[in-house]
Amino acid sequence: MPDSGEAEDILQDVFFDLVEAYRLPKPIKQVCAWLFRVARNRIVDRFRKKREEPLPGASTATGDEHGDHWLEQALPSLDGGPEAAFARTILLEAISVALDELPARQRDVLIAHELEGQSFKDMAARSGVNGNTLLGWKRRAVLHLRSRLQPLYDELF
Image (cartoon, rainbow, N blue to C red; front, side, top):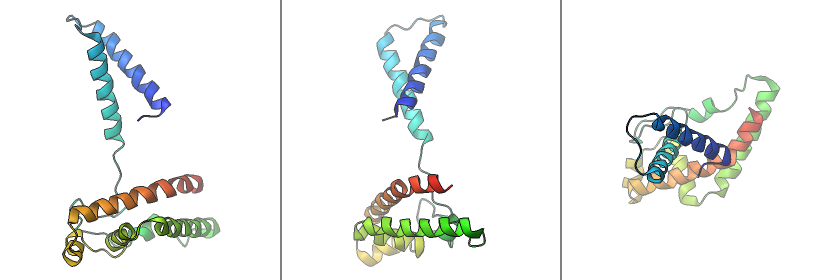
């Protein structure tokens, strides 16, 4: 559900579309249905714009290719001075705490795929768990980490 600011923007856009549609030579026969459809389409458009961004250097949709050391690239540089070193320490500690909060299977899949570079195909073959299930576990882990770390990231940067 959009927050109140987004809801106001959507509502404003819908009424703007209504005013624009009023100028068309062909009138709208069912205004309520038209308004509902336009509002729904605007909400869907907002959510499409907010698609999840992949982790830096993360794997492709197949999960078989992997960039090296993406975590190192995502953290502040060791050469960035005392502020960067402090931010790096805080972020690493927060990542550790957030990882400890995860169920074991989610944490293991996330670490195996993102940090160790294992493919979902290989993990599925070794564990006997469906690759889509492993992908779902990783997705839940990423969403948890994102929700836990975003406020800290916003504060530090």
